[in-house]
Image (spheres, one colour):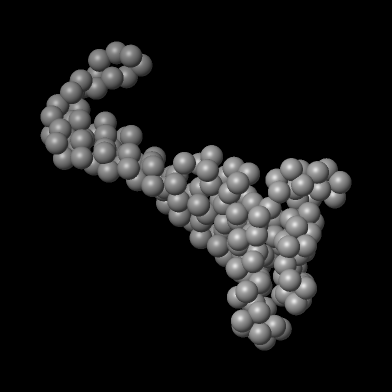
Length: 178
């Protein structure tokens, strides 16, 4: 559900994913060893984070990432310090995490719209050739097939699905430019 992928817990998870992925990337490009990068990433993903400290830190720093990184690094062995959040900015973390959350939210919306379109297609298959009264300005009009009415409902939804697909593609491409 959307509240789960866009809520504060999901935001924290997404920020941790971003920081962990960056640690892994540091290992991939040879800034740190692959083992150190993986150990750092696992630490980022599993360390206990105090939400009340995040709230207090955000009130002080103006952004959540500063306190999040402080907590992650404070709980990490000293030898991992050069593999956690080195070369990143808080904006990198926030923007990329937000895109990850939006991607998940768009997937949910697309699935829901597709379910409605599938239901309309089923109705069309079952009843589409039936004739019903058309309506115009709340008055009876010429008879139409049920399929015509269903098409009028389905077409805008199909357009929304296409636009969601494009937005999702654009979001993923924007990750490259961050």
